[in-house]
Figure (cartoon, one colour):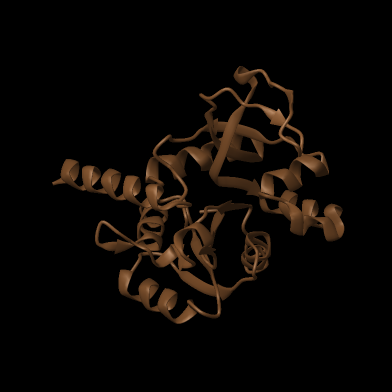
Length: 231
């Protein structure tokens, strides 16, 4: 049990009408509940640090209490941007933890198998990111819409969470980034720029992120199918 989990859960979905993604009902339960139960059931996490907003803190704390998870859960306050929330969570990770797992509350379809795969990859490499192959042809375009280049698809992957890092590497990456850490779109980018080797491991195509109303519909269908399979 050398790994803590940080779950940023402070964001609102602009394309979801400003609704709070962590508390969106999915198959009868809040999205965050699915995440916390998968992390708890994995058996490889020592504690979970949920990063809430001032607006949803009370609801998040009530949810964590109601779930009655078998490992400690701490709720802390994050910032207006995801990067600020993740760093707030990382600052609460005990110094004696060797690894930190970061997983977005907006990805409620994470499974305990994926969490275990993430930890195993980090133990081998020090920094590991869930990723899936890109199936579409990707175009890099200029601001005026002109195509600049078409990257070779076989070299591209779409990054997901969970992402797992050695805690000392991540904290050093924050230090080396200076004030620029706030513009990182994920923590793997910080480690890459700091010179640490980051590896990918197989993610899950079902591990989608709640961004649009269509994502919510698909997520509910997948969860309902999983529940039928476990019945």
